[in-house]
Amino acid sequence: MSLTEKLRAEALRAPVSGIEAVANYGRGRPGLIPLWSGESDLPTPDFISSAAKRGLDAGETFYTWQGGIPELREALARYHKRHFGMEFSPDEFLVTIGGMQAITLALQATAGAGDEAIYLEPAWPNFAAAAGVAGATPVPVPLEEGDNGWYCDVARVEAAVTPKTKAIFVNTPANPTGWTADVETLKALLDLARRKGLWIIADEIYALFHYGGRRAPSFMDIMEPEDRILFVNTFSKNWAMTGWRIGWLRTHPSLGRMFENLIQYSSSGVAQFLQRGAIAALDEGDAFLTAQIAQARAARDLISRKLGETGRVRFSVPPGAFYLFFAVDGMKDSTKAAFDIVDKANVGLAPGTAFGKAGEGYLRACFHRRLDHVEEAANRLADWISKG
Image (tube, rainbow, N blue to C red; front, side, top):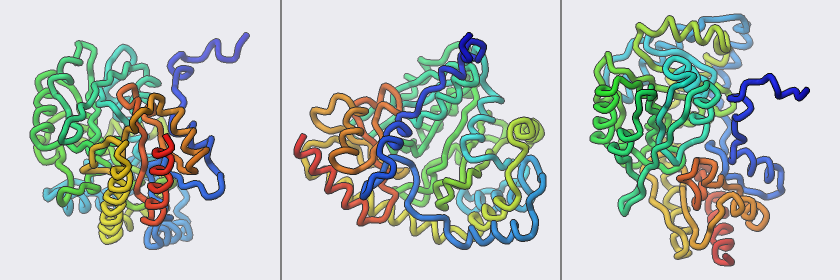
């Protein structure tokens, strides 16, 4: 008897990440510049690490509040008031094991076996995979790429809605394209969700990595308190904390007890000493974040210029997030190209196929790194492209 014979089909069908496949192939190569993952090359700043160490030294190693320690939930309310210009209650926030658990909790609450969940593609692959593991059917709706960049045709989203649809996952600014919804698009999506009785799972983790102003437009700007919107977020991107695995979920306070129960039966909460570091990130990290956004803008402009000068690359300059999603003339197989670039250019990229069928023909480069590394990577890529 095969060991897999009695396992759930949904678990067996969980896909291998196309990003991970290339990273595993190239990891550890001398001199390789890794632009495949969505993270900076900086370690977590000391003011955050020191706060966590103080909590560890103080013996904060016991079971703790399922939804997060009160001090962190209060810090999340302060952070949101500062950046979104409105009042928030600490009871609206729950602390999670990274943004990925926040997404999993949102799916557990909204969609399961026999249900459908719509998402916009090209897309970070984890939402669709998590929906599939939960037993729901992920339904991709392609973004469009026009002369003015990527955009969402809300009519296509509505056409994808069926009686089985329970939720729409909206990531803006988006990974991998950098697409950033304007207020009118957000209003149209919210109107659709209201008319159809759907939940929106809003992934706005790159809201402050926005190059057109203070921050990207948010569903928070237009929603009413009773709207069916779950916000998922993470400390990973803003404060160089990808390895910490700590995030949050924002919801209506009336749903807090339910989500605390879901946390209890999945992870039993986040280590308290890690939450001390998260408080420091929120309360003391704005200057660090501002500097990172400025560097990311410079890196975006640099890699866009370098690859654009080849005359063989097509892309839309991303208004948000920190990825360049680009197509190369004559490239038919992005997965094969990504492996070839590791071998011949010593640069690690993510293949477009990792982001769904709509990503074929593209490659993704994370430019959230020190500028000299981005410049060297761009030069190597330009050389690889020229030898075509």
